[in-house]
Image 1 (cartoon, rainbow, N blue to C red):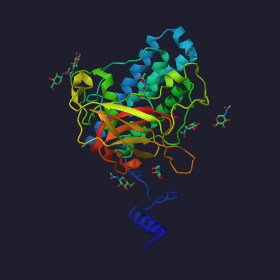
Image 2: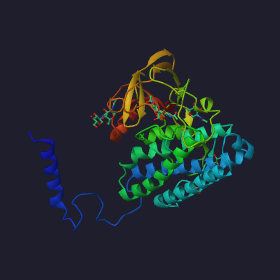
Image 3: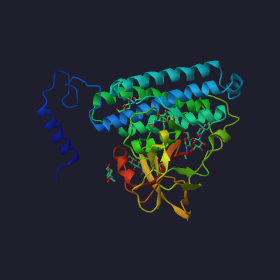
Image 4: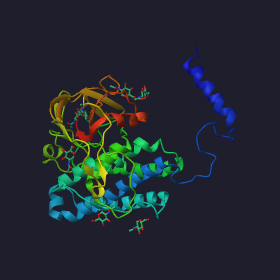
Length: 362
Ligand SMILES: *[C@@H]1O[C@H](CO)[C@@H](O)[C@H](O)[C@H]1NC(C)=O
Ligand SMILES: *[C@@H]1O[C@H](CO)[C@@H](O)[C@H](O)[C@H]1NC(C)=O
Ligand SMILES: *[C@@H]1O[C@H](CO)[C@@H](O)[C@H](O)[C@H]1NC(C)=O
Ligand SMILES: *[C@@H]1O[C@H](CO)[C@@H](O)[C@H](O)[C@H]1NC(C)=O
Ligand SMILES: *[C@@H]1O[C@H](CO)[C@@H](O)[C@H](O)[C@H]1NC(C)=O
Ligand SMILES: *[C@@H]1O[C@H](CO)[C@@H](O)[C@H](O)[C@H]1NC(C)=O
Ligand SMILES: *[C@@H]1O[C@H](CO)[C@@H](O)[C@H](O)[C@H]1NC(C)=O
C-alpha cells in the first residue's frame, strides 16, 4: 500500500524525468515551452469561445440599452449618480474589448456577429437586477466560463479568456453594490456547463444575422421558480452602497420553493432556431449548483410539470462556517442525483429535466 505522500513523490519523479527543468524552474507545469497559439484547437474550444462571444455581445448591448432607457431622474431615485452611470458606460467599453479579443481568437471572418435582444425590465432596479442575473457572475459571463475554462484544449486562449472574466467578476460585485446588497456573500464562484449557460442566455436573443455561428450546445426546457425571493422588493428602500447588512434574510433553509417547467420541443433563441431537448427520465430531484457543490433535494410533484422542494441547509465544510446556499445560484430539475464535483459538472447534463433557473438566497 503506497501512502498518499509516496504516490505524490512517484508522480513528481515521473514528471521530472520527462522535462529537464531550466534553472530556477521547478519541473512540471503545462505549456511553458511552446509558442502560444491563441486559437481554438478543437470544436469544443470553438463552440465554448463562441458561446462566450454571444455573452459578451449581449452584455455590451444591455449596458447601452439600460443607460439609454432610463432618465437621469430615474437613476438618481435608485441612488445612482452621474459617476455611477459613467461606471456602467465604462463597463460597456470593457465588453467591447472582450468581444474584440474573442472575435480575434475565433477569427474575425467566422466569429459570430452581434444580434438583437429582448429584455423584460421596466425600472432601474430591475435593470440592475437583470445585470446581476444575466450579466456577469452568472450564466456565461462568469459561471458559464469557469465551467469550461479548465477543459479547453487551447490553454493559451484560456489565459486570455481568464483575463477578461476576472474583470467581469469585478463588475458583478459592483452590481450587487448598486442594489445595496452585501457585495460577496459566497466563498467560491461555481461553474456551470455550456448547455446550462446557453439555456439561460438563448431566450434573450431575438434574432441574429444570417450565417451566425450555430452553437452545438443543448437547450434544456425552461424552469420557472414561482416564488423566488425578490431582491428588488426587499431592498427597494435600500440605495446603492458599498455594503449593507441584510437585516431580513432573502430566504432561509427549509423555505418551500415552488417550481414549474416546460416540456421539451420548444423553439428558443435566435430566430427560434434552437429546440429545447432533454435526455433525462422522470423528474425526481432538484439540483442546487452553488459554491463548490451540487446538492440535491427531493422534488414533490403536484401536477403536470409542477412541483415543490425545500431550500437545503448544507454547509460547504459542514462546520457552520459557510452555507452552500447563499447569493445567486443555479437550480435544476433532474431525474437522478449523481455525485458531482466542480470539474465534472458536465456529467449532470444528461440528467437535466429542466433548467437551470436562477435562485437568490442569503
Ligand atoms: C432575476 O432573477 C430572479 C430569479 O430568477 C427573478 O425573480 C427576477 O425576476 C429576475 N430579474 C429580472 C429583471 O429578470
Ligand atoms: C449569507 O451570507 C451573508 C453575508 O456573509 C451572511 O450574513 C448570511 O448569514 C449567510 N446566510 C447563510 C444562510 O449562510
Ligand atoms: C433572423 O431574423 C433576422 C430578422 O428577421 C434576419 O435578418 C436574419 O437573416 C435571420 N437569421 C437567420 C439565421 O435566419
Ligand atoms: C451565408 O452563407 C451562404 C452560403 O455560404 C452565402 O451564400 C451567403 O452569402 C451568406 N450570407 C451572408 C449574409 O453572409
Ligand atoms: C453585520 O452583520 C454581522 C454578522 O451578522 C454582525 O456581526 C455585525 O454586528 C453587523 N453589523 C452591523 C453594523 O449591523
Ligand atoms: C462541498 O464541496 C466540497 C469540495 O468538493 C466538499 O469538500 C464538501 O464536502 C461539499 N459539501 C457538501 C455539503 O456537499
Ligand atoms: C465526479 O467526480 C467525483 C470525483 O471528484 C466522482 O466521485 C464522481 O463519481 C464523478 N461524478 C460522475 C457522475 O461521474
